[in-house]
Image 1: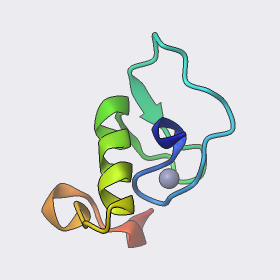
Image 2: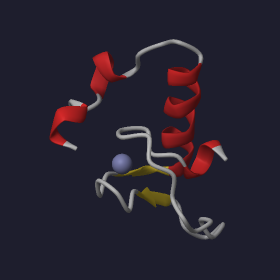
Image 3: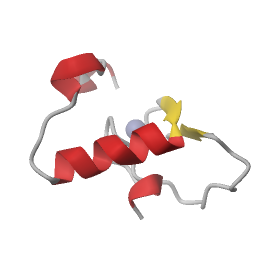
Image 4: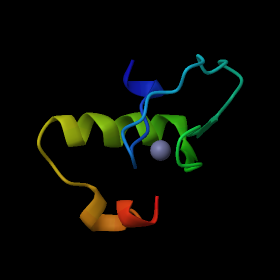
Length: 62
Ligand SMILES: [Zn+2]
């Protein structure tokens, strides 16, 4: 379910993303990101890395 988890706040989308939907929009914080990039970040975070330090907006603004 990594593609449905928000990379910014960690919330899980309640609906599955249609394959035609290329942009993931978080229903909790409203963050938008390309779905493949979002899922990649989620996996990085779960692997113990912190991609947020690179180019993500601070979660505090979420
Ligand atoms: Zn979010």
